[in-house]
Image (cartoon, rainbow, N blue to C red):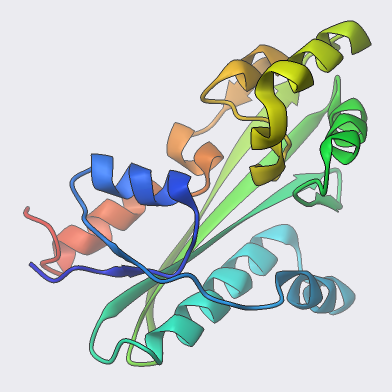
Length: 198
């Protein structure tokens, strides 16, 4: 079996793949994501196009270091009524971000792009829609205290697989997409290409 390369430092993505029976070699891309995101926004790209473009750039960069290997780039965007939300810099930013999302619906867009020898060979983009409940500020402060700096690794400042689930009133979409990877389409692609068994 050929081991694909994951062009991401995300522990969550790595763990999802490994739990699904897909061993990966982790080699994170080193790109200026903020600059690329800003450029895409200035060009009028929507969040789905931005997630796909970021995933592709990561995979292409890492592909140069792994001739012949299948390289997987991934990215996730949070879009709330046309506004892109990024990972918070600190807990104060996480608090402000969660207050802005409180009682509102937003969309998480996860993209994965497969590249071999500098050529894009496949991609998938999936969406999940999440509605936050109108929680109180006391609850929010207690949540942030308990969750700690882990919230800084999530684009939405929540970890839905843990305590962050309590922030939500409604969730529509695949759990893996919410965690940052269109896993089911990716597994189909890997099966079709002999990376994992059929």
